[in-house]
Length: 224
Image (cartoon, rainbow, N blue to C red; front, side, top):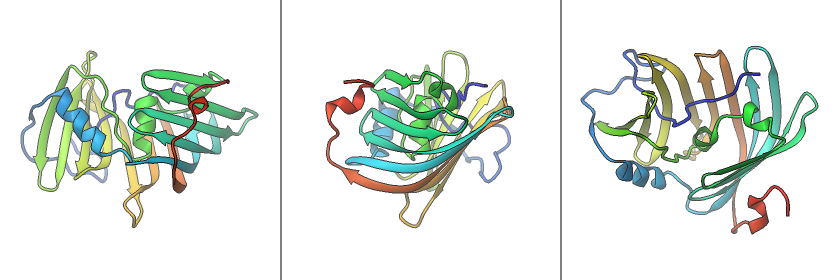
């Protein structure tokens, strides 16, 4: 099974040609800072804890998986997914608490997008580490472009404080793309991550959201 290493730092990398359904920004990117980008990312997060219910499916060209689940979101940096999956996997748990990642069984980390991408499929943005950060404003759209130590370029497109989409560029070509669909309330109801380099796709359909009180500490541990 291919690793769903979608957009490890995440972003909407603007390639020479705009990806399908997207219009390339007009203007020139100017240098910015990681601190400024982190402040923008913070504004995309929910104001309160929430529980997001969803259905998901993945296809890496060799194996197709599908299931349902729930995400517990505790801004600014904690996320827990409890999922069911086909092919006899049963139930699985993935916990992202700050920089800590835990999974049971471990294979779930290969089935799902990486920790930064999991935030974005829910419509939220966590700023990844980057060697260079740049910014561009084009009318109602703002673009934040990051370059990591490996030279991968990723750019986040936002409209106000709303994440609109993500693409990655490597070696001058678009390799990964995130598309978000939002409902009348402005919240994401479908996310699709395409890894063009490996022919893989991950789709999440959000079926419900509800606010929650703070989750107990045990939520962020695999076992008591």
